[in-house]
Image (cartoon, rainbow, N blue to C red; front, side, top):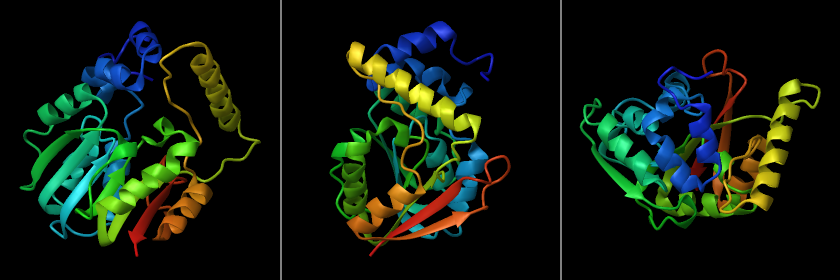
Amino acid sequence: MFHRQGPTLLELAEQAMTSVEHGYDLLAPKFDYTPFRTPDPVVQAAIDALGPAGSVDTALDVCCGTGAAMRLLRPLARERVVGIDVSQGMLEEADRRLSAAPGTAAFQFVRGDALAMTFDAEFDVVTCFGAFGHILEEDESRLVQGIHRALRPGGRFLFVTGHPPSRLRPGYWVAKGFNAAMRVRNALWKPPFVMYYLTFLVPRARDLLEAQGFTVEVRDGILPEPFTPLATVIATKR
């Protein structure tokens, strides 16, 4: 499950008993060696759906982590690629890892809360990969509002998510069990560590996006195996 250069069980336990921000500061140097990072083939296939290299001016990656999506967005953008993340450790790791990334667009790293972004009609594209589990359901509308505000008219919000799984599949109950354990942890221990599965799935994501003023396109089957069942969503700001 983990690369030999990845975190130990003790390090993961230490991360889980602190806040999201500090937990990812601790995990940052080893994050790319964990299964929590969205694989490059998934990110690349999704970004390829946006168009050819140099087809947009600016792009923003929300909850950018160590910069996996920023690296692949750079050839797409002519001017600027911005990453925002609450963890300073992750941003520093992204800055280090992206120093030789292909492309000419300028990189910018912003420490900030995805639920309190102040960007105003600055971007042609916004992406978010593998971070929806860190957003509580009651806060998802705030995330969508901030992304809508950050985009220019006609701008697109790209992400990968799932369809609701069958309750007959073991994975559904594993995810539900993990979520239950996390709720108990957060009820008993402060600060909370927000990390849940089965979040921002297609039906709810579509409803939230359309309510905010997006036109939503769901593309199935465009990701490589074994991720083909996941959906690539492109929401365009009307």
